[in-house]
Length: 134
Ligand code: CO
Image: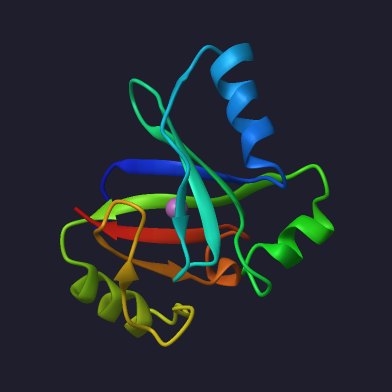
């Protein structure tokens, strides 16, 4: 069911500092920062030949990544995003398998303007999973 790894997301406290590390130290090509109020994050994408890294920092007071950054004060790996062809069919299959979809269970528009949803880490080896319909 899952296809390509679309991106690995890394939560950071300072998105400018993190972007500079990826651009200047690691020599990667990065995007401009984009605010996603619906998700409570600011994102910068690092474009690699085979996938992307999504740097995310908190946006607003009740960002879903604030708690993560309180526990992981240096930042850290936050989620993996896998591509799927049909997000609603994938969701329904996963729910039938016992997985927990976060939020109200319906896809939201993600950083690429495509439908995304998140699956609880408890069902996937301790890793938060994002599905993106491509
Ligand atoms: Co993501």
